[in-house]
Amino acid sequence: MVIDSHQHFWQYESQKHEWIDDEMATIRRDFMPQDLAIVYQENRIDGCIAVQADQTLAETDFLLELAAENDFIKGIVGWVDLRASNIEEVLALYSQYPKLKGFRHVVQGEPDHNFLLRSNFLRGIAALEKYNFTYDILIFPHQLGAALELVKQFPNQKFVIDHIAKPYIKDGFYDGWASLMLEIGKQKNVYCKLSGMTTEADYKTWTPEQIHPYMKLALEAFGADRVLFGSDWPVCLVAGNYAQTKELVTQFIAQLSPKEQKKIMGQNAINFYNI
Image 1 (cartoon, rainbow, N blue to C red):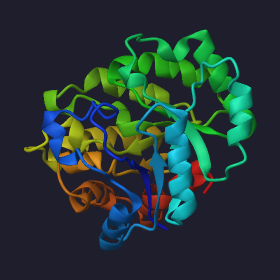
Image 2 (tube, rainbow, N blue to C red):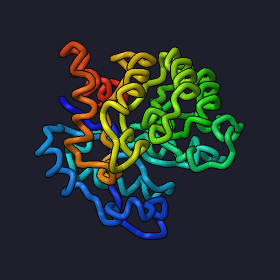
Image 3 (cartoon, rainbow, N blue to C red):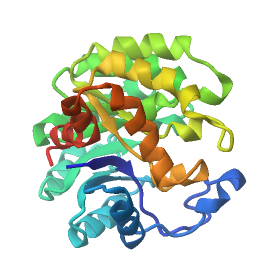
Image 4 (cartoon, helix red, strand yellow):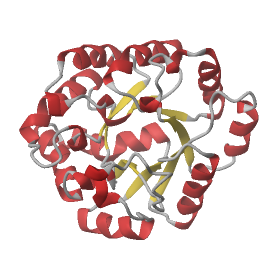
C-alpha cells in the first residue's frame, strides 16, 4: 500500500491562511478530498494522513469529518493546545476517534526558540503516550537543538520530523542542519518525513540533484525503517505538480531494495500511525 504521510485540506480564507503569501498565490483556493482523490488515482496513491493547517480544535474536528466521509484518508494529525491545563480531558475526548492518530503544533512559527522545552508544553507531550498518540515536529533548523532535547526526554513517545526539518536548501545551508539531524536520528523513537523539500528550494529552479544531499542525509540518519514519503499537497504545488513531487522521492530511493522502497512509500507510515 502506498501512503502519502503528509497532506492538507482547507477551505481557503485569507485571514486564516495568511501564511500563503503572494509567491504561493496558486494555492489560494479550496483543496478538498474530491480534488485529492483525482490526484491519487493518477499517481497510484492508496491513502493518506491529513495534517492540520490551522491551530484550532475546529480544524481537528474538520479533519475528523473528512476522514469519516473518505476511506482513503487513513488517519489525521490534528491540533490541541498541549499547554492547556485540561489537556488530559481533551485527549481523553479525542481518543474515541480511531482515525485521530496524533497532533502537531506549528512550532516553526513560535518566536521562542525553546518553545518545545517549556514546562507547560512538556506536560502536554507527556500526556500523549497514554493514548498512543503520535507527535509531528514542525520546526526550522534553528529549533533542532530543542527538538533533540525533547525527543530524548520521552523515549517511548513516537515523534516524526516533518519536512526533514525544513533545511534552507535554496541558500545551500547544510552542515549545521545535518549534524543535528544525525543526532536526532540516533533516537529510535523518531521518524522523518521526506516531504516539503521542493518548497525549501527555489520554487522555479530547483533540481532533484540539488535536493539529493539532504535526502541522503535523512536516509543515513533515520534509515529505511524510519523514513516516510509525504507530498505536502497542496503546498507542493507552488513548486511543481504531484507527479514531480512523488518522483523526487521514488527516483532517489530506486537505489534501495524493493522491500526498503515499500517501507518508505507506505509501510513505515502504516507502522508509525498505526493505520
